[in-house]
Image 1 (spheres, rainbow, N blue to C red):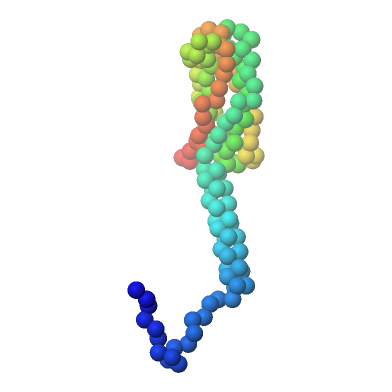
Image 2: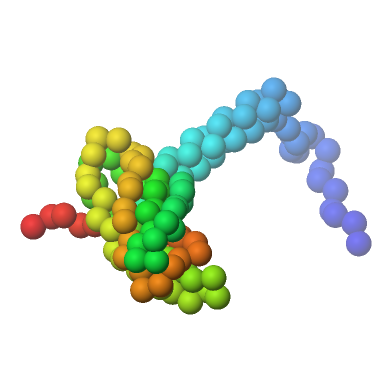
Length: 134
């Protein structure tokens, strides 16, 4: 089936946008999309907190010294769950470590975690921003 032909002289020829206009619109849309994606990413990353293990030393059966880095919004306090594991993988110590508010987004925290037996490893399970409003 073919499309019906238009009567000659009755309609203008179909117009297309100049190639330059299409390229400019595409670039503007791409830049705008990147700006929106960046803003959403930074906004989402500023809400939460994250922690990563820097080092640990299990020099005693009674405790393990843990050092970890916390990322959270500047000026906000956080709390991080830290745990120690025995060689067989059982949990031998755990604590919720408070992280004070500072002007910096990152902070290294040292904490001595009490254990029931000698720990083989330690880990930061996760961190969360604390609501300090009254």
